[in-house]
Each structure stands twice: as structure tokens, then as C-alpha cells.
Amino acid sequence: MSRVKVEQGDEFDIEFQDGDAIVVVTQEGNIRKLYMPQMGTEYFNSEGYKKLLDCIDVVQPGAKEEFIKFHEKERKGRIH
Image 1: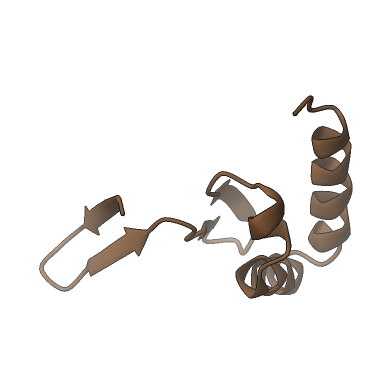
Image 2: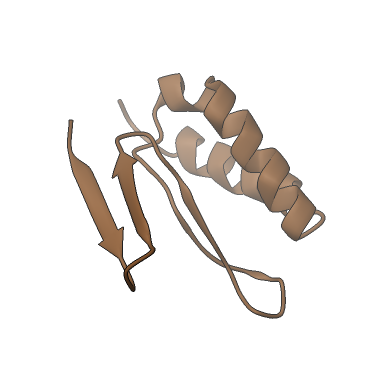
């Protein structure tokens, strides 16, 4: 399992694992960036994905629906 270790200062030490998502929130409270794992069917059906959608909707109301629409459109365009 690959891990990314992010450090800034002596107190900040977090290890990320496969499947983890990162939400970057600006000082003003907007979502600046989402770092996502590969999003296959397994991820879309996971509890983590549902919680991520709830999280982005709390930070930026309406983002959940936009995110779902964008990724549904993207998934339909893929050839497996």
C-alpha cells in the first residue's frame, strides 16, 4: 500500500493511504482543490465517498450535486 507523508513544522505529521481524499479549503472558506484516489465503482459505492460529498457540501453548499453531475458525466464517457 503506497503512502504519502506530508510534513510542515514539528507538529504536523499525517500519513495518507490509498483511497484517502484531501479537501483543501481556503482561508475564505471556499474549496480550492480536491485530491482524489482513482475513482472506480468500488470507490463510488464506498462510505468514504458519501462522507466526502457531505463534507464538500457543508463547506460549499451545492457543491455535492455539481460534483456528482460532473463525475457521472465523466464516467459515462469512459470505455472499459
